[in-house]
Image (tube, rainbow, N blue to C red; front, side, top):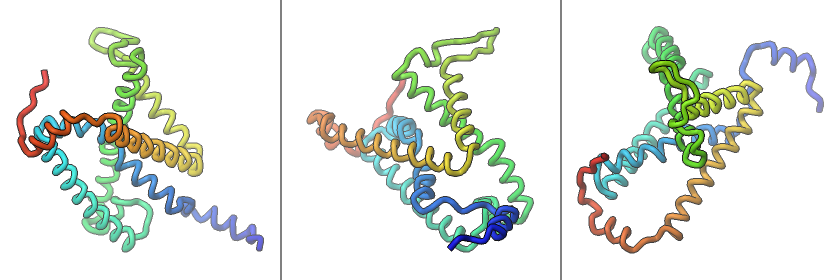
Length: 221
């Protein structure tokens, strides 16, 4: 049956958001936001802080439990308040419009902006491992204390490119998000398999198992 064109026109002119994200794409958005560059960066800092493999795994387990609790809470809130706006809607209903308004602008100007900048910097640092010419040591422009490195250009360029693709429409952004998230998960799986199969080392395994809970402070020179 062909839909009535007048109905489609009314639907488009109503100002409502179009629901084009299915279960898979929605799941990829959540997975992509949770499994990020922090997994590769924060793990080293945690290991240096706690000082043992056992405490490192314990921290990951505890944070995983906390994240799961938060996910259940957000799922309940989304079911009770199925409106666009996410946390803004929840805070507005719980604490009033002012708190929701302040959070929305804080998210836009600081929280989300800072997160995007941090991910861009992490991407540039990992890129420089494969292409040293794109590292922070390669200064492209300098004026007194103000400097622009190749890594900064890569970070800004990656953010600009992703912004452009998402601005083209929901379908393009959805395809890019799904592709990058699947690539990220596949890379993690490959790293895990390489660590189990190729990187198996009896000395390292013995040291981790014997001193599993023996924490010690690590100094970085």
